[in-house]
Length: 158
Image (cartoon, rainbow, N blue to C red; front, side, top):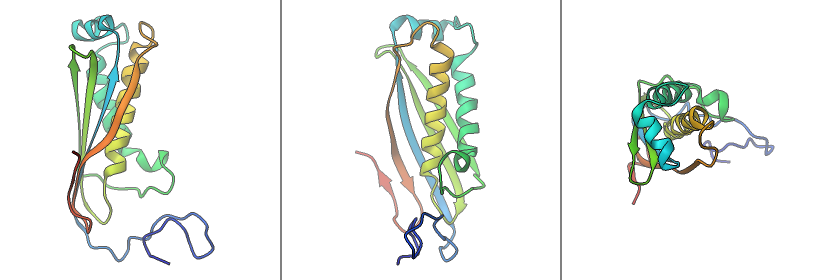
């Protein structure tokens, strides 16, 4: 059986053994979108959401979420991230909050799950802070858009 599988010789789930892998610089970027009513986007822009500064709180929540990925995703390696950046932009024309998270590490395994978790937690925070005025918000388009490092090389979403 391959060393890089989530199953042991008996078919039981396990954490992948990355002991033999070489360390390398690894980066991943994920994106997501929270679509909302025009009124909700205006409230965010004008600082009128009663729970506070939505974009700042969601940015911090995303960073914290990335750091907690192994607590949330079974069999995910605990990583010592070297960098987590979460960017949120209000797109009034859609209307939506666009989220991008980039995670970096020098290590033996990638950081795609950390970037996806950062986006997810940031998006959920936007929803939580705005749900009193807009329960119809949707969280969509969660995806990895960039990955580099490791044996599999670079990936760029189309």
